[in-house]
Image 1 (tube, rainbow, N blue to C red):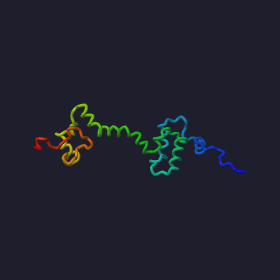
Image 2 (cartoon, one colour):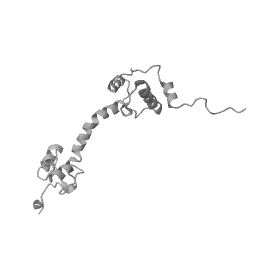
Image 3 (cartoon, rainbow, N blue to C red):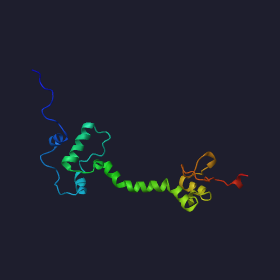
Image 4 (cartoon, helix red, strand yellow):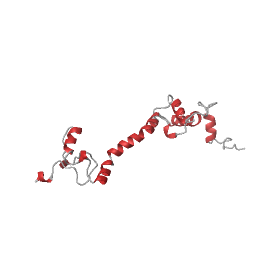
Length: 158
């Protein structure tokens, strides 16, 4: 008689969770998520970039079923740091990249440190050298609003 190759038990997610779960959760049920992350910080890996798939999934299961960490995007130290620093980084990026165009649209003029009069002085202050727009170099790259910030006026060219 042929043996059945179908397993007697279906290893679904819940079976895996029960198998990998310790006898009791490490943290109590009434802990706030912030306290859970603080308590898990010491054993939390720095990042998952060089971890094997087996270790990544083992840590994922532990986070979900033993530590009870609800946010899957904050399961490593790097992700935690990024989570809290992202608003500040986004604010700095907004100021650096689209603010010049927004300023130009609102006030119909270039930013004071990017206009024709102050640009050369600003470039020497910040970058330590002159910026020559004839070579295609601008004080702040990627921002080409008409007129571009030339280092000399049309009268000086004539």
